Image (cartoon, rainbow, N blue to C red; front, top):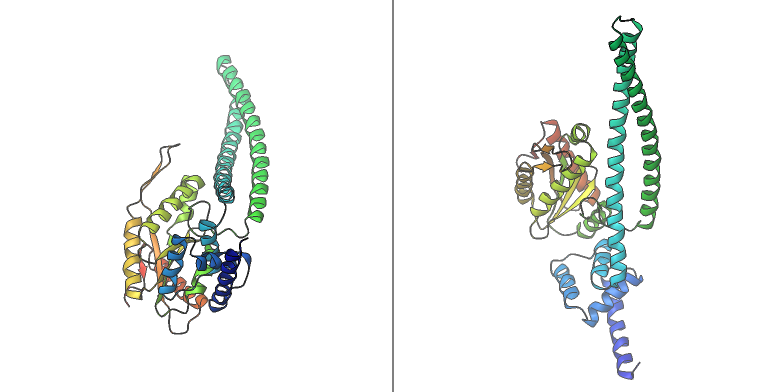
Length: 339
């Protein structure tokens, strides 16, 4: 390394460490590399992203830091591997749900056949005099018994396959313990949200929305889990399309989403929440495999604005309380009604 390069690196180092201390960041390799690159001004896009956060008075959460590091500093091979893992997780999730639905169908089919076998056996045992009918009944009983046996075998194969998929998902989960994205919807996950809200809880104006899909269990029960997944994806896409300025939507868990809205007061949050609710009402989901459609999807929303020195957990809890009221009052509504 040339003397000039060495001196430049030393000067960059001297500026990087104070920035880590200023923003209360640990000197782990990810943080150090990110801020070293920032001081070096080697990436205009990275600097623009960080400057935008700093200008608005936000601090970089650990999750945001990891995202910036992956987007601007990670080698392409590592990014490709991460995307592959995410795709694999989404595929395993879809196959697993398919297995559950198919297993449920075979259980119902087996029960149906058991009942009909008993009825057909009664007809045969009553000794009907018409030989042709008896022969026909015997053939039907024989065929149904064969189909029943095949169904039982298939059911066993499904159970085995489902266990293998569960094992793969667990291994994938272990390898992605720092994952920040939900594989199904593509949204940032709850871990990311927890990190982001903690980094923004000290700003003056901050609101949170908790969005829950109404009667989601009935959708799964009536249409199957794969259709339920399609609904989750569609709702996630609609909620994301409604976010403006610094608002960000996260997959909170199950059929729940959370929207973090820095700089938005309760009045603005309620306006966005109702816009989201009305947008979701327009969703029409179609399963190309079966041709089934769902067009009556709705959401309930609870909103809350941070009070004074309120902590993140308390703010989320108040928004969740408003969501509970929205559910209790009949769903497909936003609470509170007025500010």
